[in-house]
Amino acid sequence: MSAAAPLAWWVWPLALFVACFVIGLIAVPAGIGGGTLFVPVIGSFFPFHLDFVRGAGLLVALASALAAAPVLLRSGLANLRLALPLATLGSISAIGGALLGLAMSPQLVQVLLGAVVLGIVALMLLAGRSDVPAVREPDALARALQLHGVFVDRASGRTVHWHTHHTLAGLLTFLAIGTLAGLFGIGAGWANVPALNLLMGAPLKVAAGSSGLVLSLVDSAAAWVYINRGAVLPMIAVPSVIGMMLGARLGAGLLDRLNATIVRRLVIVVLLFAGSRALLRGLGVWL
Image (cartoon, rainbow, N blue to C red; front, side, top):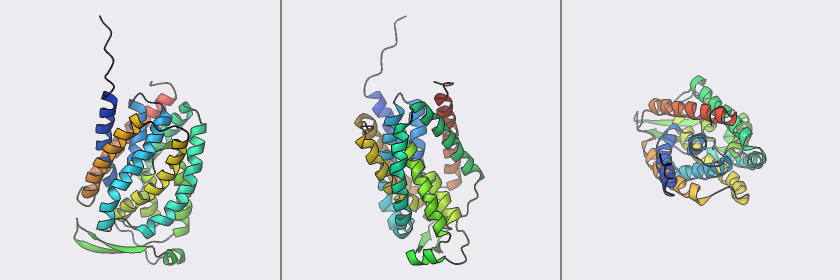
C-alpha cells in the first residue's frame, strides 16, 4: 500500500480561515473574545508550534474586537469611559505576561493553558450572572471616572440606565487579567465579562460589548512582544485574522438578537474539549 500523499500547502490556511470564521461568529455574542477559543482549538488540533499559535491568537483576538467595535459602539453596547481605564492597566500587565510566556517551555505552557481553559469552563458554569445587576449607587472612583451610560435593549425594547461600583477592585482585577492574556495569547474576554458584570455591576450586554474594546488594547500591547520575537507567521496569522474579522462582524450584529444561553453552552462544550486536549497533550498523554 502506498503512503498517503501529503496535503497541499493551501489546505491548512483554508482550514484556519473556516475555523476562525466560526469562532468569530460565536465568540462575540458570548463576550469571550476570539483568542479564548482560538489558542486551545488551533493549538490542539493543528500542526503548529504553540508559540506561533499564541502570537496569532493575540492578533485574532485583536481583529475580532476591532471588527465588532464600530457596531457595538453605535448600538451603545460598548462604553469607552468604562473600557479605557481597565484596558490601560491590562495592557501594562499583558506585556509582562507575554515576556514570561515566551520564556517558558511549550510543554509547560500547554499544561498551564489546559488548566486555565478548564478553569474558564468551571467559571462559566458556576458563576452567577445578571442581565442588569442592582447597583444602589456608584462609588467615588466610578463617579470621578464617569462610569455610567444608557442603552436600548432591542430584545426587550426597554431603555436601560446603568452605573458601576467596586471600581478599585475592578481595576486591580484587570491587572491580573492582562497578565493571563499576554501569557497564553488567549485574549481575556472570558474574564472581562464576569469582572465587569458580577464585580463592577455593568449590565451583561454592556459588559460583553465593552469587553471587546478592552481586548483591542490589551491584546495589541502583548502582540508587539510576539512580533518582536518573531513568533508571528503570516501563513498562520493572515487567514486566521481574515476569518475572525468576518465572523466577528456578523457575530456583533447578532449580539442583541441571539439567545445568549445557547451561545454560552456551545462555547462551554468547545472549551471543555479543547482544554482537555491541551492539558493531555502537554502531559504527553494525547499527542
